[in-house]
Image (tube, rainbow, N blue to C red; front, side, top):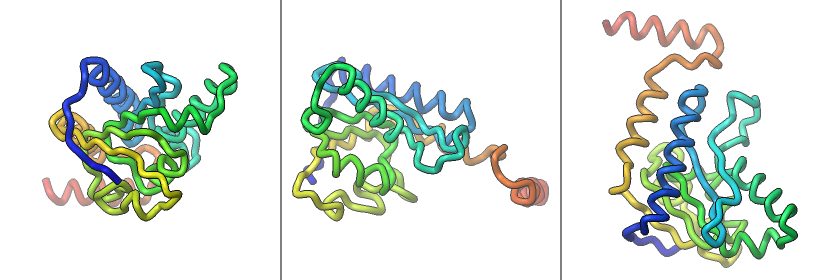
Length: 183
């Protein structure tokens, strides 16, 4: 894995801002606030945000939603999916989890850009490590801590501070009881 800090171009900053807006949309829909884009030759070929609660499918992370869209884009544009992935960049507001990071590695993406580390579930450098996922291909990783990472952190805090409407009732009551005891 090559990891370096870089300065993003104006266009890349716009892509990153779009990923953050998708994360905000996820938050508004009671999902973990992660948003991402897959960009091939300057064209957005896939975008996604977490939809686990909405779909009831634990694999519907933003990265997988974007990958599905990229696959459809390739099919519709008569492009070889594997070849396109080799020249595709992932922009994501939060370090991908181990499942998503492994998928990025297996797809042989050209590059991954993220702005905030994920100390609980990060699969790139925080908990897992891309080198562990094999395939002989190393995705170029750009960790961009100075580009709105606080916005991602604030979204995550707000998400975890509120009650999860998808949690079982007994779990929500426990959280409410704990909050009442603290007050």
